[in-house]
Amino acid sequence: MRILLTNDDGIDEVGLRTLYERLSPIADVTAVAPADDQSAVGRQLSTDVALTEHELGYAVEGTPADCVIAGLGALDIDPDLVVSGCNHGANLGAYVLGRSGTVSAAVEAAFFDVPAIAASVYFPVGGIDFKNVSPDPVHFEEAARAVRYLIEHASNVGVFETADYLNVNAPLPPEEGTAPMEITRPSHVYEMDAEHDGNGTVTIHDRIWELMASGSVPDPEGSDRRAVLEGRVSVSPLTAPHTTTEHEALSGLAEAY
Image (tube, rainbow, N blue to C red; front, side, top):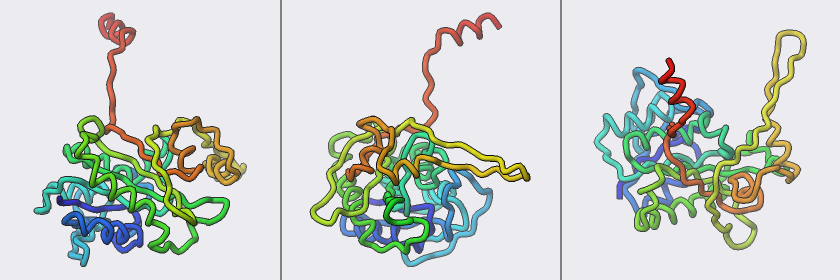
């Protein structure tokens, strides 16, 4: 199997290297990843990007979407699968999917008809400040184990016949044993708000992190955030946007127009 490995944290980050080392025994892995941090850029594209050879593959002066397009369109890799991650921080909830560089790389692969897996790790806001912690390979081991398991088994049972990509979010490894896996759907609970200070500055808050820190997320059973908060590996099988549906009322408006 040939795997194109990318991320949005940068090619030298621990999460990507952990996946590279974990997947190399079962696949020919080539990293095509951003040269530096490109977190939360979504599917932003560039026109021209510089490409540099790297010990793991290629470093790209661009976004995760740039990396996937370069890897699939310009480099002689021809992968069977694209893996994006392992992200330092969770990508949970429906409203996060479009802004995440990690997930956007998987979406970009889907438009090339190449199955993909996006992988992220939830660092508990109540215990570890993931923005300031120096990540260690052990932090990503649960996610890497889940990704390898899915790579070894998902194609054999036809998972990618109906799912374009899998969004995997793992908790930190438990003190004993391993985390169970749950098939989930992205939560639709939305807790964004903003405050104006009266002096020209608006501060935007994502209140869901405060709720996760307190352990009181309003997400229903079966949702990705609920699973991860309760210590399970969340796997959401998703399709690339955008889905269209028959809409009788809208069809009537078009006819009247």
